[in-house]
Length: 234
Image (cartoon, rainbow, N blue to C red):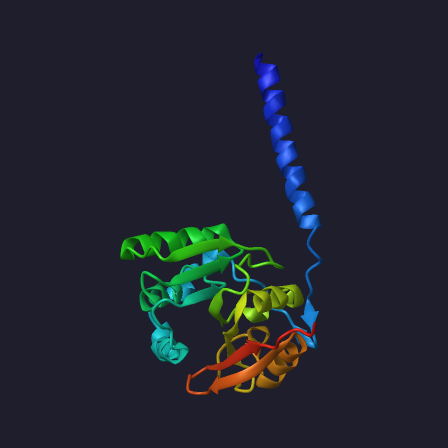
């Protein structure tokens, strides 16, 4: 093969790859900017990952208290939705033990790479990183005991297909633990589009086939609300 032919072949492969990526993107519904009267926040870029593991986070958010309230047990199958670099993924993996499983879902491979590195340092082998899409977390159907969404749902720019996929992935008695900064409290130092009120949360989640089954109001800045899937009518 001549140098020209080799370069031409490489160019064709690159072009084909770009076309496939564009076709894949075209299959997705267009992202929303607002949903049910709420402005959707921009997704945190992976370059902001150090903020997730900042030294002050425990003091500000009482993360240990949240982990206790989640009541994760050995053998459970848990999803950390929007896992980032694994701030909650790693301790949950320790709680569910070797026979348990944690599915860490991200739409940025860079976040998953950071998580894998941190899990490797701790020797955790029960974490499965999943590169999802804005409409599909690619979770196993009917398998999960718990989906944890910490400060991530407000960034979903296609909330309805994501909630439908989460609904499908839960066991009949499985739950979603939704954690969001309180819009009702002006003292919470977070941008307005990164906050949600209980009223707005209930409006969106009940409209998408979930019922509220538990609440915890003991965190300094955040709501914690547990939702269970309502069985679909046949």
